[in-house]
Amino acid sequence: QKEVEQNSGPLSVPEGAIASLNCTYSDRVSQSFFWYRQYSGKSPELIMSIYSNGDKEDGRFTAQLNKASQYVSLLIRDSQPSDSATYLCAPKAGGTSYGKLTFGQGTILTVHP
Amino acid sequence: NAGVTQTPKFQVLKTGQSMTLQCAQDMNHNSMYWYRQDPGMGLRLIYYSASEGTTDKGEVPNGYNVSRLNKREFSLRLESAAPSQTSVYFCASSAESYEQYFGPGTRLTVT
Image (cartoon, rainbow over all chains, first blue to last red; front, side, top):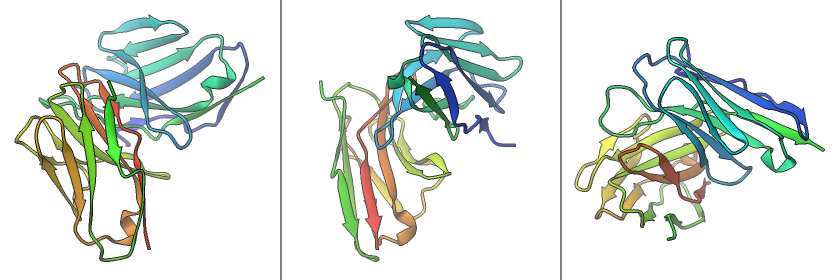
């Protein structure tokens, strides 16, 4: 089993729709979770962090965390063509005193006009 | 603030040559990281430095060395480059929140 699993996609949604990106992780003691967006040829950009079970909203983005199910998701409302990118899920490894993140392979999102 | 900067942006090396990738951050972060990103492999941690004066191996340290020169700077050295080290290299830094911020990357080709 991979440490972090994401559907590679591509996930294609029409402009204005909700894009739902999912991630499961194997480290049961992970406490911090991050979503990064990476445009082609660019570096990863942090877009959301979540530490507690439940939902966290920031603008058009909502992160959802369920530690019992070892599941974290990212919803993008009112999707725009500029949201087309690869989205990386990254739990922080549990039990370490530094910020070691384990990155998933990423989900490619395409938003078509 | 520039955030995390990396030099060079592009580099082509011949097998056996050496080079140092430079990284600096101006966010006063304690921790710094070096990753490589390859198609189908995702981001993999090469080395990290939890704080000034300390460095430790990540998942794929073979063929690399690092130096944490001071709180701002963390360099990655390839002593004898191999074609398998052709990759995109990213430096990142983080504070106590563990949120990592990435530099623009170095695209390295070893022929």
